[in-house]
Each structure stands twice: as structure tokens, then as C-alpha cells.
Image 1 (cartoon, rainbow over the protein chains, first blue to last red):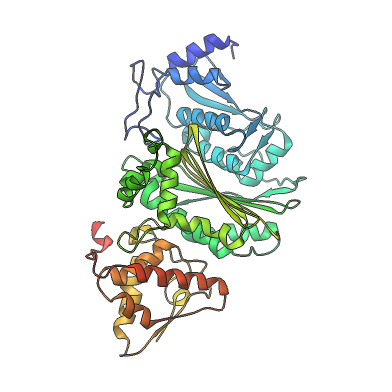
Image 2 (image 1 turned 180 degrees about the horizontal axis):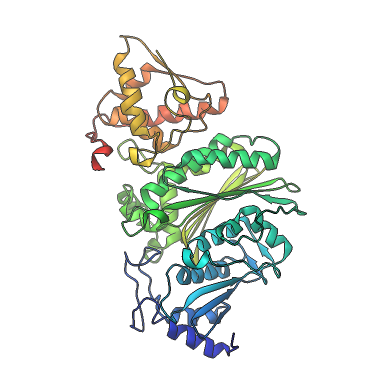
Length: 378
Length: 121
């Protein structure tokens, strides 16, 4: 692979993306219905990659348009949120289509520089790479020689390598030396609520006991899956095979921290709100905010959750998001985070006190990510 | 009269409509709960076992499964609540009884006309 300067690289990537979707306009705005992410982007054209290189995105590109994404040192949705979603956005944009000749396309994701990754980031990364055009992904054999062992084992436990026909771990088993254990991710489709029992069984094995108040976590998961049917993929441009959700959990035997992570790659709660049955009430709720904040994803997300608390018999839709909070409430500690597009809603209980945090980010996480965190035997 | 949701309907009740999955609130209401309510004697109650293998009840299921009895004009909230008695040995399920009673109380009688979601497919 020819080494080129970052400036030349930036220009080459930007130019090649003009040809990616057969669209030769210099600024492409993807329309609703054509975009895989399902919403109108301000500018998703050829200059996007060029700009992101300036923000730290690390790519290598060959003459034939093959792009290698070099993952960063740390990926998580807290301290490294913006960088993490930047890489996920890049993978999303490159991985989803079968490329034409010399069109920029994802050829490789380099994990060797990745030193730390959270459970939720690992799940989302796995989900994004599972959308990698099948005909390309199935030919690949992950080159794991340079991976950090902790990272390698984490993805092995998650079941990541089963995405590839050439699974480097096929027929072998690896042993963990760390305190954090993940359970193999579960992938389901709309209506697959019974699959949450698999998670309960897997987590029970890892923890070595049942989880107190599990029924309330299951209620939240059940509603999250129902939401996938009603809102996340309720648009005609989503192909049937793409209407999926992902679920995993992790347990730290030293800190006793349990995390459950649910992810769908749908349109996102902020974008689904205007089409929902609670939109009229949402408009009233949003009118109390300064105009500049009203349409922000974080505000829309907060509206969706807060309004579900006051749903009435006439418009009994929308109570489901409150179900997500119940596990934390019943255990009286821990947190629930919902990340969707550029918004975060975090509900936590600490020392018996409830807190709500709402954050607006620069870059979107496509879809909806829900994280429950609690400490067992707390 | 008795109804054990886990044994007589599903261990994984979830979702609102038929399209949401194999054990939706709509299916529960139309094929199980409503027929049983129609068979009750004058002051007879329906004893409903909530746990016994059922993992949980989401609001979507409760809203459509129980609230729908009122919403679609089959029975008023007051009458429905007077006919239901809930049984469970796991105290966590007291929460679900409370949620069912809350949703049924808030439902507006006859506020919607029922059209089976199966007709759309």
C-alpha cells in the first residue's frame, strides 16, 4: 500500500467519494428514504471524510479505493464519545454498499491500536461491522496477531469473530485472565422478546446467581424490543433483514458491576418522535425550551422519556420508555443511559437520590443505545 | 374462573399488536381475556395468575391487553377492575398488578373503535 501525505490522502478520499454512490454532485445531501441512516444529513458528500481527517479520523487508502480504518486507542460512549462515534460513522458510511470499481469502500478495520473499549462500544462496533456488505466480509479473515490480548479476548467473548466465515478461533477456546466477562451477543428481530431469556441464562452463569429485580430489567428490554417494531424501523426504506437489535451484558467480578446493553440501528428516538402519538404533547413540552434547544436531539429525547411518565388513558401510547427506568428504580441504585443520534438521557440513582442528565453531542450515534448499569450486592 | 397467563397464554407476553410478536396484548385481549370476561357469572371474579414462569409485563402489553378492554368499549374501567383479582407468589409482581390497575383506571371507555391489526396484512 502506497504511503501518501495526510493532505493528499484527504483529497483522494474526498474525491473518490464523489463516485461512491454514482452521484457526481460535489455536495451531496442524502434524502430521507435514500440514506441508510434514515435522516437528512446536512452534508454527507465527498468533503465529509476530508473534514473528519482533521478531527482525528485515521484512514489509509489504496489506489483501488480500498480504505483501512485504523481504530483509535480508546472507544467508549463517555469520555471518548465524539471520537468513538466518528469512527462508527465512518464505518457506517463505507461498509454498507457493494462498491463499484475504484469506488471508496471499506477493506479493513485495523484493531491493533485499540487498547480499551467499553462493552457498549464493542457491541455497537460489532453491529456496524455486521452490516458490512456480506460478500466482502465473508471473504475476510481477521488478522489478530497485533491485537492487544484484552481486546482480542473481549471480542472473542462477545462473539465478534463469528461474523466472519474465516473465524480465527474456530475449534478453539480461549481463557480470560481479566475480571470483566462478557456474554455472547444476541441478535434478534422485531417480535423476538423471548430471546431475552438467553441473556438471563448467560448472565446468570457469569454472575453465578440470579439478579435481584431481573423482572424489571426484562420489562425494559421487552419495551425496547417493542419500540424497535413501532418506531425504530417503521419506515419503508429499511430492508426486512436490517430490522435487527443487539443485546449483550458484562460483569466485573471485582467491582460487581453489571452492565446490560441494547442497541438498534433504527432511525433514533428524536427522529421518530414527530411521527409518534405523543407528538402533540411533545410540542407543548418543547415550547417551554428556548427555540435554539427545541429541536435538539437531547431535548427531543428528554421529551420522549419525560412525557411517557404522564401518558394518560386517552393517549396511552408512550409509557414504554418509563419501563426502561424501572430496573434502576427498583434496585434504588445504578443508572440507565439512552443515547440516540446526538442526544444522551441519563437517569441515575445514587445514595437514594434520583438525577437526570441530558447532553447534546456534536456527532450522532445512529440508532438507539440503551445501557443499564448496576452493582450487585450493593 | 381462573386464568394463568403463563400456562394459558404465553410465558413471554409482549408488544401491542399481532405484528409485534406471537403473544401481543391484542391477541391476549381478543382471544383470551375478552372471551373469559364474557363468560363470568353475575358477581364472579376472574382470578389471574401473573407470575408462574412469566418474566415480565411491558406497558405496551398491559395497555393493549387490559386497557384495550375499556378503550374499545367492552367494559368500563370500574367494572373491569371489580372483576379482576390477581395472584402471585413473587412480591415483585405487585408492581405489575399496580400497573394494570393504573392503566385500566386511566383508559377512556369507548374512545377507539377496534379494528384488528391482522386486517392490515
